Length: 291
Image 1 (cartoon, rainbow, N blue to C red):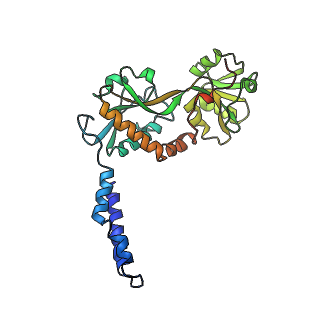
Image 2: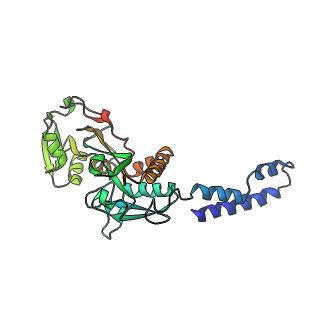
Image 3: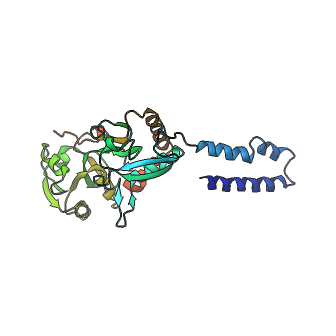
């Protein structure tokens, strides 16, 4: 970031020199534009914007936001572990944006237990529901947990009348299959070994719908422009960022940073890249008439 600022400053100096030697400009016009803020003041202002908002002992390591990822249980699009061990996904990108908004560098660690890891192994843990946080506090919300129905066609919240008696592909033994069986919605199920196969079948017209985890489905649907969300089976549960309950200073700073990157559109860009910009699911996303 500092290198980028210096590049901008160099450009500003070059422009100032060029403009200052332009004889055809009226006297004082250029001076009036340049004098209110010097290059040095511009650099200082930019650096102030990216000055760390927290330091030790609020965070574990000076200058770094240490982020916990539960890679063993978090799947695409949040965390995807490559063959070489590199991790990518929405959680990695959103955590990096958070750190930048806080004036910090980012470091990732793998954790298993949320509340035990906070304050010892990491500063925050991504993608946590309140019910899974233990003693930790969940700050903000950037995703939701729910089981969902996807179809070929425009995004819309359908009703049970649209779905009853239709064919649905799903992953055998999944949470979504179990949840579907607990509703009064009666569909003709076809089980697949994985969701990739189910979405391939949906795109090919072999099934009418696919039932699966909301964000896993949105990630796979992003590879098929014709496939979109048709509704959720349950009320979406918000997922946010876990912070140690007694670390109120970090809670405030994380919430402020999350508000910033959500307001300025950066989170929307991440969602566009990973889930084709699917809107956040709400109570209105639940399939109508479902009991």
